[in-house]
Image 1 (cartoon, one colour):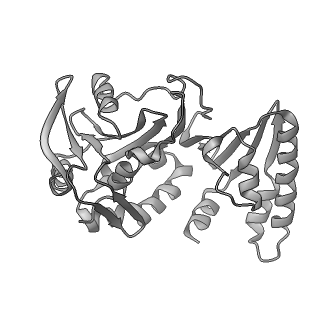
Image 2 (spheres, rainbow, N blue to C red):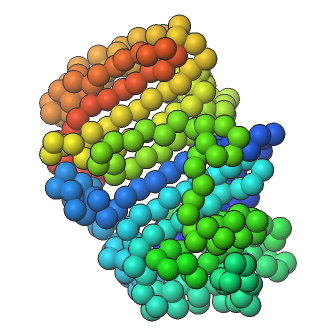
Length: 306
């Protein structure tokens, strides 16, 4: 059965295999996208229009669920040994919830469970394997894996990889814990008009045995954080890599400057894109490398569309 990319993605993020094993309770990764702000900020409207074309129109065709109009934001994070949680915020119609219940009826258990006076459901019961296949998303749900789903908090759809996480979310009416509330702080960048935030523990990156330049850079990062925001009519992009010491951060800054120089003088590159790269600010503060630039929204959309 084909269903919303966003709902399926939420299920995939929340599966136990996504959260890295570890001995501490600190967050492994964090993701937040503010679709409502994208719609309202002039600089973000082009990016949102791209999302409509690439994602939301497909949802309407595949499932008849109009998440483009109903979804305001998505927040997801994974905490070691506790698993992942995904919270979708919006004004979800009963019709949309009913269609998602059809999915649960096909692949899970529609007998409601209760916690804090609210209902939730288990997905992944039985001896069979389930393949969630929607053009770009492929996920095999093994018999031992479960996800937990609730539609019972007003304005939210909750998905977790463990029942304990679901109970904790329901007890707090779907309020997500802070990324530093579980045994260690994870760097999260913010701005006045944030559109998207993403952070990850560096231990999850750059350790796949590859020796290319980007893997080597990520291998030296203890934490990686990314921010996309609306600022003065442009899209502000910022990335920070936290390293073991200042010397490594300085080396990575040198690599970044060299790469920008090589790529921006490539004759095949769009002149506007080359000028944009050359305007990137590269700073080192302590053991952290920061990269930032402001981009014309139309250039961002053209790049996404290529």
